[in-house]
Length: 177
Image (cartoon, rainbow, N blue to C red):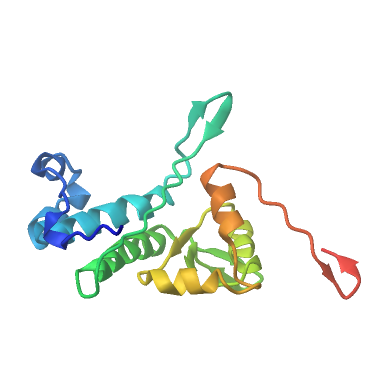
């Protein structure tokens, strides 16, 4: 048995949500139709969670940080690409506050490509003091990447979601790193 829904049958966010948005996000309600506004809002909230590293709450004797994950599923040409707006908001923020990190004359941004090796997201997170956003508008880029031995960082994503320490050891040229 398979379930098939038309995109128009799926629920939308209530207008009251948009009326309560902070000023910096008011543009979403005015510049996008309701379906695209929902995509932009969800992706923006997720992206902004990567900038909210200073926020934390206590849960079950441990501090938790707002690591949000969003995966938007819809047929082709239905506005999923509008999620790219969230990446530009984060990029603008990084530029405005110079939150990229310069180490050994290399500039590190905390936006991490979805098409990546297992080790690179960990490297970026280390260079950026634990801050990072894996951002990709095409879900198949990420899912295909997970099929590669060198690119399956699903364990990293789960550890990040649970606010766990990521440990990795590798033997390179007979030396442990």
